[in-house]
Image (cartoon, rainbow, N blue to C red; front, side, top):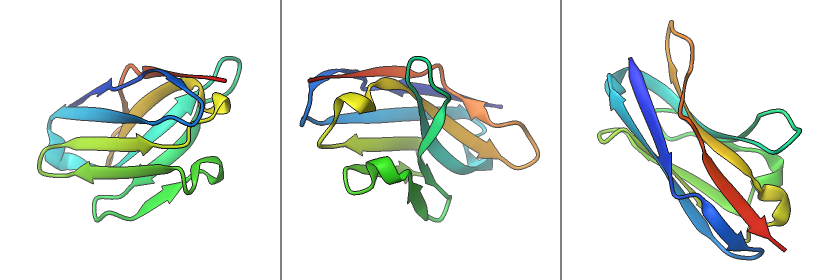
Length: 116
């Protein structure tokens, strides 16, 4: 079992920055890839950034060059540095953990609001 708790969301003006954190607990050494997803009102949940255990990262095209994901495997933490934020980045951001042979684990989400 893995539990995920996100933090760091809030209200920021366009062009500003935020840093999201996700703390994993439980059987953290069973986690393979971790990722950030987001869901805006009326839209489907979408991938923002996904980081494998060895550090390979892929990003959604919409955030490339603005967002940077990182993780600390030993601590079971995941981060998302978000720069040059835009109003269209407004969404609930969810932390995700992939464990082989089980359904993905999800946090409850943290709200990011970017004002214009």
